[in-house]
Image (cartoon, rainbow, N blue to C red; front, side, top):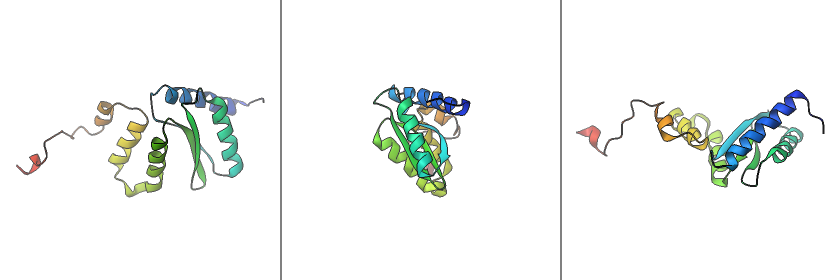
Length: 129
């Protein structure tokens, strides 16, 4: 199969994301969005399967409105949490959804915490003293 430049770039990016998931760097790797039609979603899934580095990186493609999100996951709970975040939309406060995405994408907690510099760990009830 001969790939054009865009297809080659998508394949190489997917291959790199697969490697990071298979090595435990992150639980989820979102490679991108594609048209949410059955044919395009199937074609995208096949490309992900071909680009995968190992059995530890599982391909996913799921519908998000007229589009579909695609990438790799290491554990089913991670994929379900990722889908749940999409389903909730703006019902979850942005700071919480950003933190969850950060953890799924493999960011260290200290990096996630930098987004919230005013958050200081306190003992329960300390704010009422």
